[in-house]
Every structure is written in structure tokens, then in C-alpha cells.
Image (cartoon, rainbow, N blue to C red; front, side):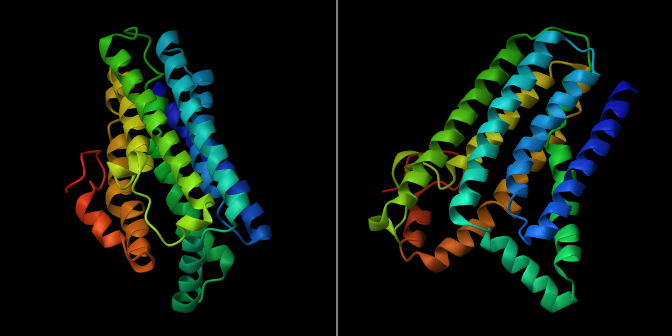
Length: 263
């Protein structure tokens, strides 16, 4: 019952947050900031869960601390990227297609195709941080420590991957070429892999508690989304069309989990 009450309260908070952001985006005609709110919104749900629960203090602090480290870093990075590069072309094309195919204006298309989809996704992915704070025991043990290490590795992996990509894009001489050095030599998507690794680590921390075990849909959904839906497929389709050397890069480089390149 405590878990259901917590999730209900957090759902209301998330709807309010996304409703406010949608109203702001109606004025700016740009939904790109939702990417930043995706990460920062999880920190908000983590903080709200921390306040509402009486679970094990050590587990609560660990979950909130790691979630905040991941979410604030990623949220600020995505905000910086938006301010530097402008609106995300993927959103613009999707909303334009909805206008042509269905006759939807910006408000309807952005509400149904962006906000109404991302809000429940965010809520489910964040289940480890929410449910992991409910139970009073047991204290953090070996599995929780291992989860914290996995999460920290994931945060570091994603951060380094994002930094290498930003540095690559700043170099005019690399325009039209493929980033295949650093972490990108071993996986075509180090940022996505680090993202998934972080949330599997958070799940391990949560899973030491009975209620936290039920948070498994969170990392499963995130991993599937990154690998099969809105992550790898959308990015790679565009890169194959724009960069002649990308097909060869795909053939020699692991798609998700880091591994030695072929050849």
C-alpha cells in the first residue's frame, strides 16, 4: 500500500511537471527541452520518493545520490547541447509528419507524440529509485555495493562518451567523418550503453529489498528502448545516410556492449 501511494503521488507530480513544460513549449514551438527534463525529472522523482518514504536510510541516500549524479550531469549536458545546436531535427520532422498525415497542430502533436509517451516511460524507468526507497530493510549489502559500482561505471562511461562526441563535433576537420576512437572504437553507442548500465546498477541496489525487486521493468524498458526503438535505430538510420564510412564502422564495431573491433 505504501508503494502504491508513493507511485500515485509521484505520478501526479510528473504529470504536473510535464504539463507545465508542455505549456512552455507551446510558446517556444520547440519540444527539445524534454530531453533535459527526462533526466532531471528522474532526480525530481527520486527526491520526492526520499521525502515520502521511511525506508533504509543508507539505501535511500545511495539511490538518490547516484540518481542525482547521473541525472544532473545528463540533464545539464542535454540543455547545453540544445542551446548550442538548436532544436532537435528528429522532433521537428516527427511533428511535421503528424501535421501532414493527421492534420494535427503543434499543440496536439507534441502532446500526443512526445509528452504523453515520454512521461510514462520516464516513470517506469525510474521505478528502481522509487520502489527501492520503500522498505525499512535490509541494509545495503554486497549486491547493493556491486550495484553502486555498476552505476558509477555507467555514469563514467556515458560521461566520457558524451565528452568525446562533443569534442569530435567541435572539430571542423572531422565533418562528414565517423567517430571511431576512444570509447567509440569499442561500441557504436557508449553513451547509450552507459545509460543502461547506470540503471541496471540502480536496480541492483533496489533489488536487495522486497519492494525494489518489482522495479525490474525499469531497466528492461530502458535497455529495449535504447537498443530497439528510439535510440540506436533512429541514430544509425540517419548516420548511414549522411556518412559514407558508417557502414564499414558498423561492420567492425559492436553495436551496444563494448567489445574489441573486428579486423
